[in-house]
Image 1: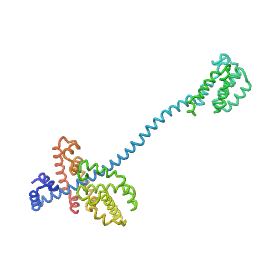
Image 2 (image 1 turned 30 degrees about the vertical axis):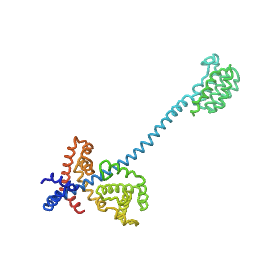
Image 3 (image 1 turned 90 degrees about the horizontal axis):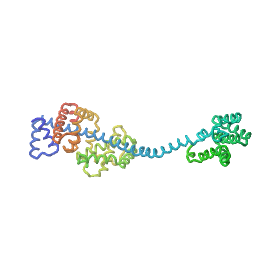
Image 4 (image 1 turned 180 degrees about the vertical axis):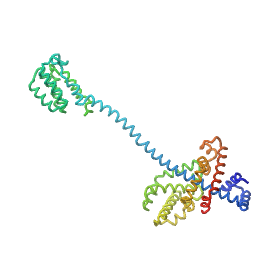
Length: 222
Length: 185
């Protein structure tokens, strides 16, 4: 008999599926033939090898189950949080960038810190007398580099030109210096005066600036 | 379910492995014997491997509940570890544990030299043969085996399994070290 034919009988004997006659015949054969006994022994040993394979596979499977747990946790926690966080953070970030770009003190001062035409009201000021215009231009430049000093100098200028078109321009310059120095309260007081006076050279601009200071976007900027 | 083999066995083992209550109670017990969380995790895995095999080999006879059997095996393994490291602990139910747990399988599984020899034989056998013999031993049908391994038919799976079994017996026959090790058990 060959090994091929033995395997079938070994398997049946191993799983106890031989009928009594076949079983008796096989056992008799094994007791007579040492070669078959050796093969049977090798068959039994091969079962040990397969059992080892099953144990190794189960160990691998347990590692995979551990990974499954970890990846489930990863899937659940961060992704959900990232989605929710992104939904909240992105609009807030946009609002914050937008408000800082257009509504911060610096942005507003940059937009409004210009000298209007003192004669034609609302346009650039080529006709201003040189000395007062030069004075104001210097102070308005100073607003960006040294706001507290600009405040001091603008206050002096307002003392000097209390009324008239230069007085209006000095008042506006002071409002700009206050805003840049962070004193919004005083800036507002000046703007409200200017916007209340219909003849004020900066009437419409002060209203516009007040609107911007009162905007909701402003509350998001710092 | 483990005795039924096939995918039922897989489901049952996964359920046991993910039984956090059981794990937690064994961890608590093991810490009482001076063990760590890592040791508990390793021992839990070894216990599952042994319990799986004992059930498939009909060495668990439902005299006790499954969880009692699992816990006893776990404790037996721990005692064995401590004994190997010359650390002894007194367990009130040591006698009971020894009666409950089948020693032979455990001893077989923890014989390092034998495991190395078995692994060498498996490496020589090749991936496909290892898998087909494993599935066959776990009572998967030839139809299931052919599907899992992507074989064209059930008869092809049968033929391959037969060839692999032949190869394995030859490998065992040629490996004198393995033969003498297994004979000594």
